[in-house]
Amino acid sequence: MNVIDGWSLLAQIALWVVIAIALAVAFTYFSRPRTRALYPGGNRRYLAALTVQAAGFMIPIPVVIILLIGRLPAGIDVMIAVAVGIGVIFLLRALPATGPLLKDLHRARVEAVMERLGPRPPESKP
Image 1 (cartoon, rainbow, N blue to C red):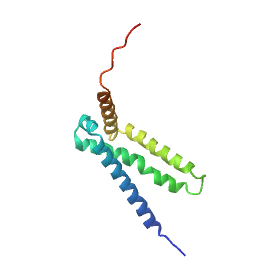
Image 2 (image 1 turned 135 degrees about the horizontal axis):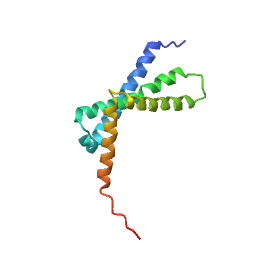
Image 3 (image 1 turned 90 degrees about the vertical axis):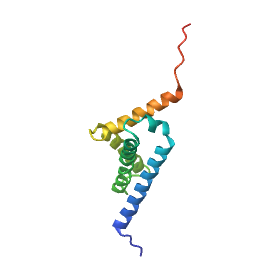
Image 4 (image 1 turned 180 degrees about the horizontal axis):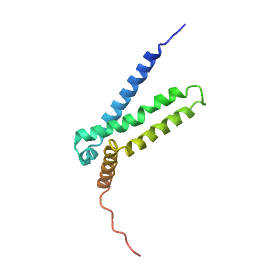
């Protein structure tokens, strides 16, 4: 008979979530130097914003999936969990402590895209 201790399972899930958050933050931090340069407050604040965003999205997903085990058809629980993760991001944007970080992150990304696209050509009138 196989018996798995509940705490060891939760510790394993937590470890994988922490690894996923670290990979997402590291990849985004190093793959977007233009956004990092445009972010107000420097690299440390940019890293904090990425961490808040990744953790806010990823932490609720396994919690919701565990809470919904066996209650819904396969796949529906994952869709609900991802929707909850997105909802947490919107909630974090509304909070006074994390809202400015995430709003500045969005603004820096938009500015980086606008820089990459260059100036808009003048519209010609027929």
